[in-house]
Image (cartoon, helix red, strand yellow):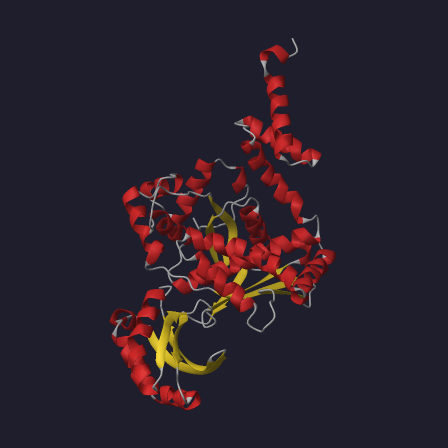
Length: 430
């Protein structure tokens, strides 16, 4: 039977039933399914070597977004996030996108930049020419320190050089362009930069200070596109409303910041679930949003000849499948298996599609009923739990708060006491 991520009513299933569905889709073993369902997948000995001053672990909810069809292939998307409504919104957006073929993606390849800061150069423009003339030598030196990466088709592929003005005068900045294959690349790129720095010092007569990777991964761009049929999303008025919401972000950086935060709700959740570096991804995305000198939205929306909404996203995503927590964290490894991605580029393209879906869902909510209704409906359960509700009382208290439009801690406590009195034997009507 052909696998499909179109799982109707997935949210109505119990956690165990949802896990069983994911297990069947991804072909997880009993052990892998057990790891995902456990809050203690990491042993103390493991976490004690991952970071410093360990006292325990900080679990956050792990959910699965359904309905994703990307480049003709079905995906289930593991997302680690504490914010309600995000996973539901992504799943709903993916369902709407399926009608017109889902998401189509492309990318520029897994290239990262290593930066070498050269100071004290008397003739920086001449020094730039010297570095570029020595490009082949510099590339050979860089590749010599990582023969495994070169063996798999990666390695330093180019050298660039720029003169930058600083308060203390001009400096020369050398960029190593490195194909990192399925790694995020920080270790490889940093090692290459450190290796070639002495040679660049000698060639230019300057002094090298910083030698480090850049998280502005503008040579590792991921792109996704989707068409949303106007009938599927609420009609022509909704299409126009979403375009107007996008145009607001296009001209106002205060709105663009929140617009892009919605994109990162989805992308950061997948980043965390797969053991990748959320800080690097966030930094690169927001830097790219401002690369023109004005902070802009990372997505764009327009109307096609049929009046349907077309959404696109272009975003740098430096993610990997080898090394770091992606390889050492058992839950991250299982989540990668759920995704079924085979390369870091495929992972990045899937994440771009998730970011587009998340952003579309937020704009549609804003353009129609407002984002608070759905968000507060899910948030109300958290408030009820914080007030001390358990079992069926969680839903009772949450539903009452939403109905009254009073999703607050004090009201949750009042309702909880009210329902408890009503259910106590002395308060029942004979």
